[in-house]
Length: 175
Image 1 (tube, helix red, strand yellow):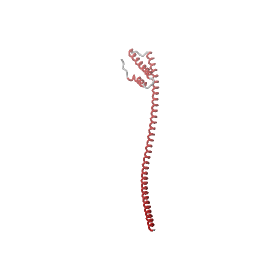
Image 2 (cartoon, rainbow, N blue to C red):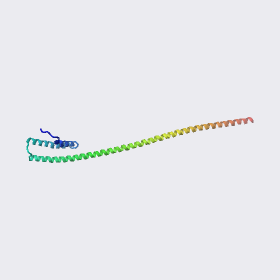
Image 3 (cartoon, rainbow, N blue to C red):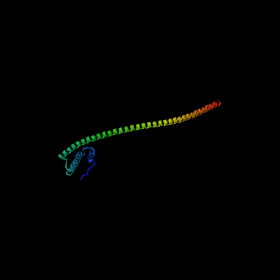
Image 4 (cartoon, rainbow, N blue to C red):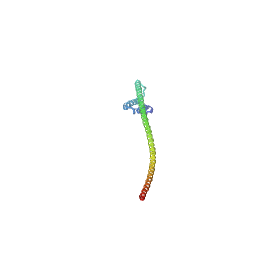
C-alpha cells in the first residue's frame, strides 16, 4: 500500500474546505472526490504494472488535466464570489455599526443637553425660592410695621377720645 504525501492531497483538502461555504456542497464534493480517487487509482495501476505510459494513459492524463483546469476555474470563480459576498456583508455590517454609533452619540448629546437644562431649572428654582424667602421676610416686616402703626393710631385715637370726653365732661361740669 502506498502512502500519500500532504502535497498530493492539499488541493483536494483546499477544495473540500472551500465547499463548506458554497451552497452546492454535495455535488462539488462528489466531483472533487471523483477526481482525487481517479488519480489515486491511476497511480496504483501504474505501480502494479510498472509499465510505461501508453496512449490510453496519455489520454487519461489529458482528460484529467482538462477536468482539473475546468475545476480550478470554477473553484476560482466560486472563491471570488464568496470573497465578494463576504466583503459586501462586511461593508453592510460596518455601515450598520456606524449608524448605531451615530445614534448613540446623538442620544448621549441630547441627554447631556437635558441634564444641563435640568441643572439650570434647579439653579433657577433655588434663586426663585431665595427670592420668595426674602419677599416673605419683607412682607412679615411690613405687616409688623403696619400692626405697630395701627396700634399707635388706635392709642392716639383713644387718647384723643379720652381727652375729648374729659373736656366734654369738664364743660358739662362747668355749665
